[in-house]
Length: 417
Image (cartoon, rainbow, N blue to C red):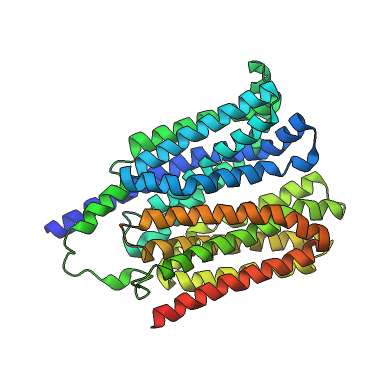
């Protein structure tokens, strides 16, 4: 075996270990986030007595994730992914503890603060998917990223089912029953941090920098990178990739956030709402490995175009579905699928476009803008819905889809040049 082959085999073995560690940590972290988000709105109503404030739970969570995106990326650039991800999990533990204390003392301000701090866990999940790409060979970068994204499914589906056991834990500890679920969040985030701290060796970003500094082995095929050919001396293509991810996320949040209200306005039950959102979550994550492989094979831009097309079909469904439940449910599934395609393709594209020295910075900017767009559109969607219902909101979503597709067109033109 030649030295080059031996080095390649070692790198691939390291990458497989990194992906498994990140996937396990994401499952644990997602378990805590899924559990807390499902109870956050209920806890807000219980403490404040105002149903109108229930939506602020997800808003504060997204705001916290947006604020944490760039600092975590800077920490990763200086100290590596292991330190950044572990630090983020530790901060999320503090957020969950603040929520428990706020619930026990019935302090609304502290509760909202705790939910925002807990949002750092979402930023950790987003950084983890990028960490899976650091040491991956270009042709497998999207696949490895999608495997970590897929692992979020377990927490997203299992978390809400912990409300019942959490209430019993709360009663045993003498805290409000709804706050008991955040005990699981504390444990899950703590274990996730420990998994990363002890398991993420070598650090993927630091190892990737060392590999980048080595001379390229003979026989290397640069076109194996799906984004090869879109290189530019300026950062403009990188920011176009960031815009693609942010716009796709904004479309998803805008339509998903108002679905429960739309269904209940047409006589839908709480059970129907929960089932519909579950279908949407399945659309978001279940097929992510498929889109990762597809991105590796045909390139990120075709997959991004396809994602915006699917989002367009979803907007048509919500715009014209009216009281027909199955159309709304189909639209929500398509909304999740389109989001998955755009997010995986966009994240893979950004990683390929950004040089290794600025990659963490651009990834942090992407996460921040993505979450900020979600928080902003989530707050604005209620106002738009109040004026024109799902039809008007779907038109707004259509405009965002057109802007995202335009960004993909500009990148396609850059690649052809």
